[in-house]
Image (cartoon, rainbow, N blue to C red):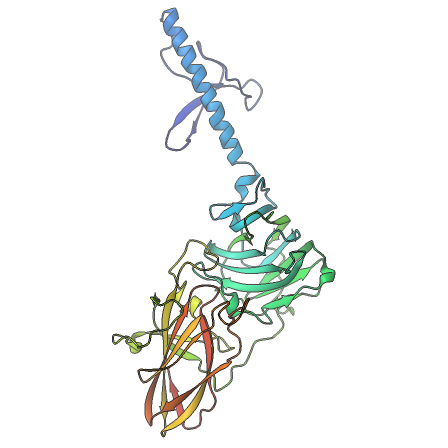
Length: 439
């Protein structure tokens, strides 16, 4: 006799598969094999009157039916639907996931049983059923991963662009990486349905479409630390939309491009010597005024105690990576942001004489510039802040402020606010003559 245990929720039921003992009732659902059946054992085995025996048989029948339903539910949980973890995803109406695909309305679904650090990921992306759809990989969890995603055209007819972004603590960062080599257009000739192949090796990734051997997107420097992780599918679609769909998912961790291959051609930037590359950065703080920087610096600021952070080679200071989500850590991405945050970044400029120097900036979302404790400038670069559909990206420095330096040490502090889509800034000086920069 083989005893089995099934745990539906917090209740335990024991059942036996064997020949029937006296008084047992055969289950109405199929057994696992010839001659096998499920029998619920309960109550005394004999010596009872007819009414008692009838009672136990009736109880046995009820429990058998209950077990039938429970085991059916268990079988359902082992269906293809369970291949995808869906706790942070909303399936499209009437969508039934399979191990190799699903149709998703919002959020991120992932395959916890499939992990890779390097390799290839292939799938078919159906025509747009929403605004964005993307492949997440090297997932540490549903808030920390790399993602390459597709952007639909204005009329929703086709996928018009492809973009890379790292995600930290639930915050996406596309406003920080909104130019080549992290963004590329998809030609109309590619069609509405795309066959996508992503090759990942070390800190590089290539994406090819429709069996074309030439990559349409070459990411030379994936921003997160290398680590093995799960893969997932991310979607943003409005209510009432059909949802975005992937099909025929294939993952192969044995097909790893050699490091010497021309994957991710050498497109790394060389920073200008006038770029301010090293900053002391505070922890995240609440932003009571939203995008607007404080009129005055708090007296309790202690820049000497802040951590030293080095910018990327482009000069970009990625505060999302350094600090996390401006609203505090989230379990998954909250599209549009979960709340405002504020961080300070400081550097000391030592000048040989009293003079003025120009500081050029780009940032997301808002900024305050303070020199020796006095605010000189406040700016708002958030999405839609300057005209409809304004993206608010952190590109090349486009705003300039004069810094009236005194002879000796000058403390430059930036207050950077953010809500969503990437928290960061870039800063450079027009001249370093007679200046020494002390982070």
